[in-house]
Image 1: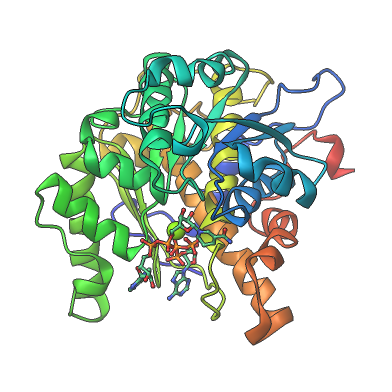
Image 2: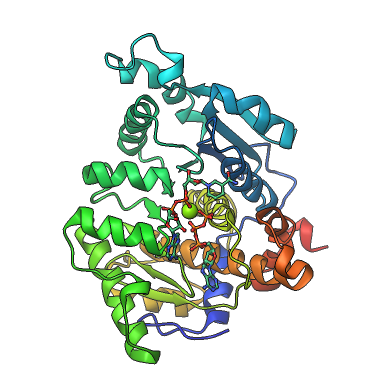
Length: 367
Ligand SMILES: NC(=O)C1=CN([C@@H]2O[C@H](COP(=O)(O)OP(=O)(O)OC[C@H]3O[C@@H](n4cnc5c(N)ncnc54)[C@H](O)[C@@H]3O)[C@@H](O)[C@H]2O)[C@@H](O)CC1
Ligand SMILES: Nc1ncnc2c1ncn2[C@@H]1O[C@H](COP(=O)(O)OP(=O)(O)OP(=O)(O)O)[C@@H](O)[C@H]1O
Ligand SMILES: [Mg+2]
């Protein structure tokens, strides 16, 4: 469990710093303060993906986990778990009179009305490619961005971005989680020569170097968004700092494991917002200057007793989400081997959190 590129800090040190952004469970908090996350996805074809994502958010520890989906998917997703709040608010071609002439902003308004009550959006799991749905989600993304609501983009959410890069370009409050295939398509859409992990033919250190450079290049082309390119190892970059997450994962490539990643990231992003809102005393000293450069980010990670800047915590969130997912997959694989399914990862999220990160000081959950 080692190997960190550029930000040359050990895995252990990174997870120690992640623990600082995990809110302790205390009597003073009320329902909702430690995370209200909504997954936007779920359609007639796919109901598993939004469920796996939302339940990962819940199991990692956000207070409220919502799914905003297309009408036909809602009852199905509700039946998977009574713990999720499922809202059938997404329009599709089958729910409007004329798919060719819609008022996308009006159709998006019931979802936009929810934004003030949400900390984070996860956009894309099982969203599908219906033209009406995608136009509506585009409106939600524009509004969420204008209100600085953080979002995680995956699957069909990434497809949407490929058609209009301005949706994310320069937005430093979002994480994109492309698989190898989606990374290649994103790079093509951005007109950037950035090979995916599968396209880099070297081996060993040279391969890792080229993969890091490619992820960095795409992140830069998108104006500094954070990218987690999933694969044999996860390459994480915001165009300035790059980390390789190569914690051992499982060896079964069943579908839906990326959904555990997006859900985990949703909760971590909500916790990050709580950290920056100073919702509890972390015991850290105030930071005189916000970190921007790679060196400044590295210094904040290593300082241990100094408050961290948004650039640093975003990188740590990406690192932690990747680690928790890969560790969940490893544990699920150990138990289930060839029969492993995405739902087996769900059961491992909490233990993975405990083994990699652990409860912060003072948390009642540590008793
Ligand atoms: N249980 C569910 O409801 C699931 C739904 N899913 C949803 O299904 C929709 C489509 O997602 P897909 O995963 O099919 O789309 P992708 O674009 O990831 O995959 C499309 C094609 O690329 C290939 N591919 C994927 N990763 C590759 C790699 N590393 N190397 C080479 N080829 C690779 C796949 O075999 C597939 O043929 C999305 O909405 C997604 O969220 C998936 O998340 C899987 C689980
Ligand atoms: N070869 C591999 N070895 C170890 N872990 C891997 C490997 N490939 C992918 N993973 C891990 O599996 C998880 C899902 O990545 P994957 O590439 O399967 O995404 P995906 O295709 O989008 O998945 P999904 O089926 O959910 O859409 C990530 O956490 C990634 O780190
Ligand atoms: Mg996927």
